[in-house]
Image (cartoon, rainbow over all chains, first blue to last red; front, side, top):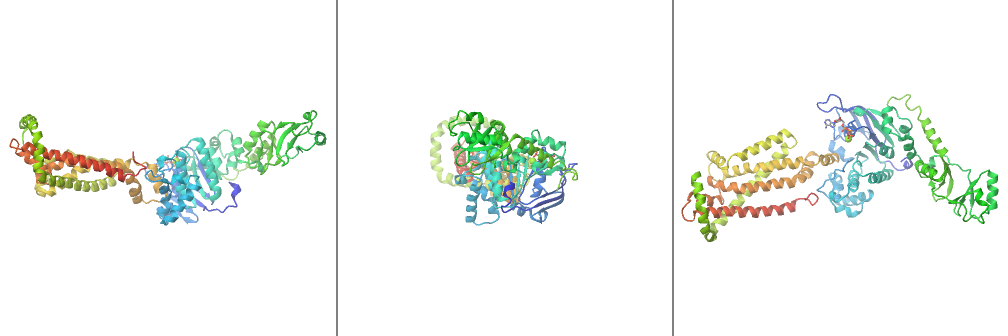
Amino acid sequence: MSETTDQKISGVEIELAEVTKRYAGQKTPAVDGFSMTIPAGETIVFVGPSGCGKTTTMKMINRLIEPTSGQITIGGESALKIDPDQLRRRIGYAIQQAGLFPHLTVAQNIAVVPGLLGWDKKKVRDRVVEMLDLVGLDEEFAGRFPRQLSGGQQQRVGVARALAADPPVLLMDEPFGAVDPITRGNLQDELLRLQAELRKTIVFVTHDFDEAVKLGDRIAVLGNQSKILQYDTPEAILANPADDTVAGFVGAGASLKQLTLMRVRDVELKTDLVTVSTEDTPADVRQKLTNARKTYALVLDRRNRPLRWLHVRELASAGSLATVGRPVGDTVSVQSTLQDALEAILTEGGNAAVTGGRGEYVGTIDIRTVTDTIQQVREEHENDHENSAGGAG
Amino acid sequence: MPDSSGRTHGSAVAVTIAGVAIVSIWEFIGQRWNVLVPEALLHASAVLQCTLIAAVLGVLLGVLVYRSPAGSAIATALTSAILTIPSFALIGLLIPVLGLGVPPTVVALVLYGLLPIVRNTIVGLDGVDPAITDAARGIGMGRAVVLTRVELRLAWPAILAGIRVSTQLLMGIAAIAAYAKGPGLGTEIFSGLVRAGSANATNEALAGTLGVVVLALVVDGIYVIISRLTTSRGIRV
Ligand SMILES: Nc1ncnc2c1ncn2[C@@H]1O[C@H](COP(=O)(O)OP(=O)(O)OP(=O)(O)O)[C@@H](O)[C@H]1O
Ligand SMILES: [Mg+2]
């Protein structure tokens, strides 16, 4: 999401200070002295084992659960001094299974909070249409009842309802936990797109570390009693988990996950490849290859797009450059993730051509670039835990 | 009232009389039409008004106790206990306190009508998915709003079913209220039973009973319509 920092931030900062929740009749608190600053406009993901207190911590932000002690500040205002119902109307809330009102239509569900806030009918109607569009649902869904929707569609309506009154803060408790992996992937993409546009402050709870990596600007890995084991960017956590528990949560394949976070444009591309155009003669190419002391070249079309790989051996029998060589299979764009790039490198056999915005050749990426990048990120985060225990704040 | 020996004797006679009476019962109803219709209307009106009072009290009671398992258990037990008191006995007990006529009838009917409504209100409210109330609270609905705009709406089919059962129950029990000189078709049944053996006594009791059955069926049909009209399409089964 970092590429959208120029977008206007509509979220506000949330600050939790020494927040504790002790449920009646329990010896140990469910949340013990939780302190965290959540920057405005960022998506923060709470991950942690079942029962560690993620939901409890989140619900104290909108006071569905009253903290036993501690301070919560939202946008500079103490949440504990505002009427809870008023507070909640300014905080979007989306949960697993969506929690839609089954007796109300989709439009009525979305209209609930604007209605509570006393918006006039016309404004509410317009807003419903706008929200349906925002979450990618056709207007024909407005009159349907929740049971006439698929799980994924219900979840979209849940998000639309949460955002209807344009709250600066959005709380999401495992909102995509109950849908199939493909739908979940789509919903995650939608949320990323939406957030790039809206820049709310989002607190997102999940069990799924990969989901956290994908969605979070920062991830808070929580242990029992909501103890913050590590609070950092996904890159930093993947590169250097704070302790064994976090490492266990990150799971196998941390480096592969790291690759999903970085884009080809973030790494230095190789530009020493010999490129030739289809108009060049085989003799020109041979000359160029000899000069550069290379054995193969990349043939580009008139608009500089990669066409074929050409080995010096293939030149001997070639009349023109229009047909010789092996067609370029997989290219990657500067927008692609390093994971996609790695896939292309493996299928292309060593390196892959990288293209820019209009498909034009801009360089190549090889396996060394990928491994070096991972190494570099590791080194950057090597000293992360030396002076901060836990990494909160 | 006939004792047990009288009853077996009476039913043995009823078969033969019924055989003859089937033709004349219609005649009898024809002759008594001008009395039976007002009685039926009074009967229906008494039952419906008492159902309404029982519904208001029952839903209120249900709403007060549904959050607490102990409260729910006590409310259900109390209202069931009322239902185990024979209606004759209850009305009999109420007469010395409230006198004859409408008051003991209303009190008895309302008390009997409570159980199905209270129980169904509790069951209906309990059955609301906690995720839905959590979401409702979470987006800023106050307690009262959640109750009236979400929970009661979702529990409504169950509550209405309870009210319907109550009405059916009261249709029968209301007949017994005639013992306390209450209004309705019970008057026919009672005077028929009191004069058992004499001319047209069976017809009278039979006409009253038939009237109650017909009323019950008609009202039940009306409930089906009410249920269609008042239940959201989103939760209709
Ligand atoms: N209403 C409650 N009353 C008493 N204890 C509770 C209540 N809600 C939660 N707890 C306890 O508090 C602890 C934290 O629960 P919480 O729901 O916050 O965990 P979680 O991290 O959200 O778990 P999950 O991932 O399973 O949703 C648990 O041990 C739970 O048993
Ligand atoms: Mg939870």
